[in-house]
Image (cartoon, rainbow, N blue to C red; front, side, top):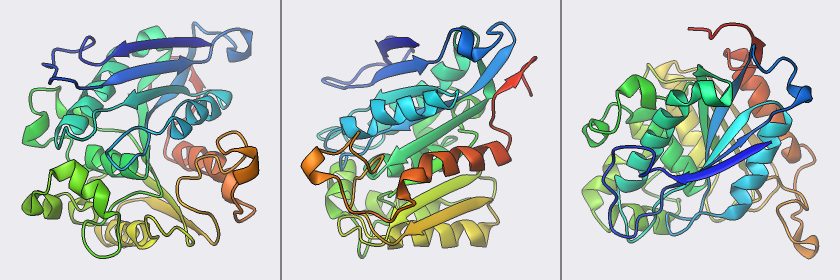
Length: 285
């Protein structure tokens, strides 16, 4: 496996804000198991960990990348800038990361038309804004919209709804207390008919980020006619990541519904239904 890490500000023309993060780490399968590497084209996924826009959780970073790599994908984890940095710093970093992944498709054996983005908790919100605001003025100098726009989204117990039962701290960290900006960045309001396919999952027991966040986004996707799949599992606390001992201490492996641990396979199957899958030969335009 190729593991390569660099700062997104060194990989792009973006001016780096003081103390900004923006570290992107690539995990790319290689070797005989990948068949004829000269002909193989694989999908890629940008992974955006959670952490309430205060930090980036390592439990939702490399372990998720390795899950996707095990199924033949190339994975890219972005450690994006959090508070005191506010919107649109993290979004600009995510946009630059998407553009870099596509520009480097040849190096990593990717099909540049098969690059998804997935996010967890607050990273799910960032992922959602990436999939809806890719052509917003805040990203105009980052890259053309078609290089930023993900080909599919995966929202994992996302912080999505800015009002009511949601995660208040995430929106305060993201907006710096700007109430008008908070209203603007509520994901269910940003859903648009021309969106890419979306896979959502949440747990009913999530007390930190209630499942209504996913449910309201799902309802907005349905109203807009966007292809989506949504799984609301009965049991599992917030932030469970892979929901097993890989990402949880032995004494704290969460009690979850029996099928929660299968979410990566379900997500990848959904992406494949919409054209994101390993193939041999030319890039598919």
